[in-house]
Length: 199
Image: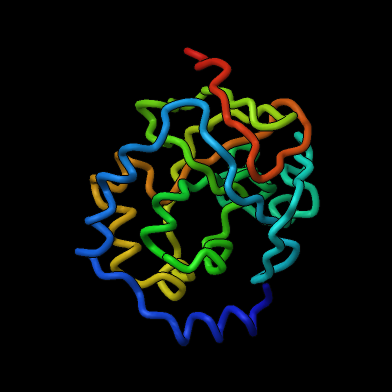
């Protein structure tokens, strides 16, 4: 998916209203607390580009191999280098499904993994490790919030919803994670909680 395709899709889509979004909260709360499932693996090979993968290779140096995370500067590191705790973003399929019933638009959210799993910090506190396929990821403390592009693609109500108190509680916009053990992740892989590291 490239910029031209994105612009065409965005121009034609009707965004969900706040009432429509809130109606999905009950379903979102029913996401499994463990033994979830990977729905999509998405790589960002360049700015405003998305590739839906049959298999992603994850490691500590790159995050998702071929993704642009390693090229993105961060204002939270002294030298502007990519922040190690924002390697990967993980979004719940029930949340993105409420925001966009059209699954072909889900990659526009910009997350690398779309999963059916309870992403609340009550269930996955920072430090929790997740076995996904061959890889192990660790949930980090960084907060994942929407940006201007999220509003353009999915509407202002979607942005307000994911950043509302309820949205923050449920981590509707998703969570950040980093790679602890390298390996392959594929759609359909099971997600299992390994441990929650307590400081």
